[in-house]
Image 1 (cartoon, rainbow, N blue to C red):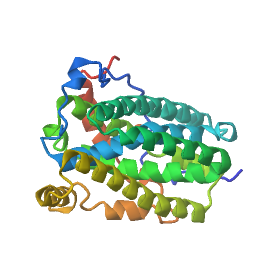
Image 2: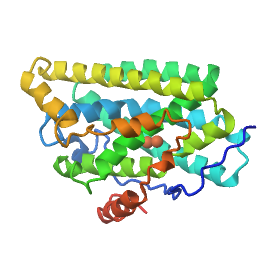
Image 3: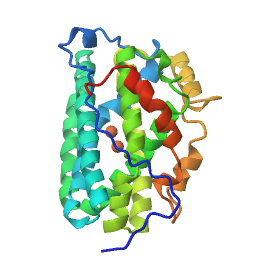
Length: 290
Ligand SMILES: [Fe+2]
Ligand SMILES: [Fe+2]
């Protein structure tokens, strides 16, 4: 087994807390069915950008859990083994809640998402069985991308979520916080059991393209269903939201590129302050059962 040590002096939040969310997004729950179609301040682009991401999570995060769990017997570090279990528990809750969100989207008429998710779930299960090392590298790479998105969402103390429907704001705040907490688990497992640099970089390049394409396909579909596919103002506002001054994805390229450094580790980006600021905000919102 390869020796792997976290570089000394790195920030390791490592306090992975499994929260039981009070939020229930099942379409049968009246408060959930009242969530507007364009729940982010009435803006179709912002809403569907996050709808597209959210709709990939039910099968995507189940894939992450299987990819990491496959190597449970190969990890003999008790701290990392415990973190792997907490990672699985957090992702399990995320997957379930986002599945409820997908049902809500299907209820709103975006029915293609159901078939698309079933097909992709089948492909990813095959991926887990046939290429487990690549599946783990893909998981670690996608965890780096989700950690970047989580940082973007939380670093301004809730400014992004302020315009969201409150139920969706709780979903995203909670998910982003837990992504920041467990961001290095899959990477640490990867570096212990399958630390091939080429595979790690290949997984990131492949999945940056794959995730971008998947999000675009889903957004285009939802815009088409809304009759907004050819609305220039929707696309312009969206472009500004993502890449304009202070945009959601503005400035993430440095963090993204850090992955390709030989000495990369997720904890080189210190999220402890962000986690410390957001944990009481989330607890105070009363969104959790314990
Ligand atoms: Fe997650
Ligand atoms: Fe995650």
